[in-house]
Length: 107
Image (tube, rainbow, N blue to C red; front, side):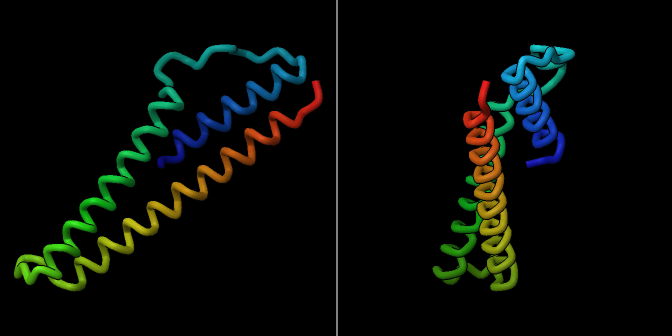
């Protein structure tokens, strides 16, 4: 997930927080050209899934004795898939925490 998408999520959460607190925000709708949060999240999940599928395919080819795959490339692909999955989990945890904070605000 890129930092632009994360910044947009934070901006949306701040606007929601300000609206819940009774403060007016400069814009109630997302600015023109801004990515939709659901689309950014869906693209990120699809990218992680694709990375995992590619790594699993490489591992299966290596295990089957395919000479086009070498151990170093397979291990790097598996670690990349693992790290991207862990990153997605951390982003999800932060979003859940932010959502809980917003829901626990007193109006």
